[in-house]
Amino acid sequence: MSLLTPEAESPFPGFRFQVNFLEQGSRVSLARGAFSECSGLEATMEPEAIKEGGRNYGPAQRVGPVSFAEVALKRGLTSNWDLWKWFYKVAAGAYAYRLDVEIMILGPGDLELNQPRLKWKLARCLPTKFKAPDLDASSDQIAIEELHLVHEGLTLIEPGGRE
Image (spheres, rainbow, N blue to C red):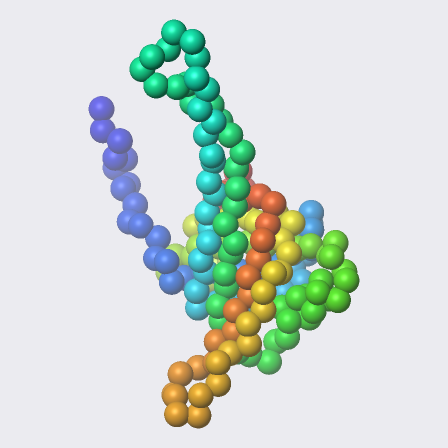
């Protein structure tokens, strides 16, 4: 039995993605960003080993708690200050002001069609770090700012909206 379908797909390019910041629990986009890098889309389940009497060939493995990595977004500095405003609002005491974040993987031409190949949804995000760009008069690099997020859930949404 072959696992390949007649229309075997190529891997998605990792450099075509878009990030939307949504009002929690809705589809209302509060901010959008073109980022040069996204890291930390990761979930880890820590299994629990159960030692049973009479079972001498290793412990039974059970599902344990799931933890999520901190997501780091990097982008070239722009005149859009929405992400800084969100970080500042939370840091100033609006600790319950959470946003959902969608990270969409795009294929060629998908941005114009608004049809991503897949979406990762981060639930109930809080910004934990905002890093202003390093400034160096002897460099010709663009100014990069960073935003780090913690979240309470990672979901893969396939084309057509299936989770």
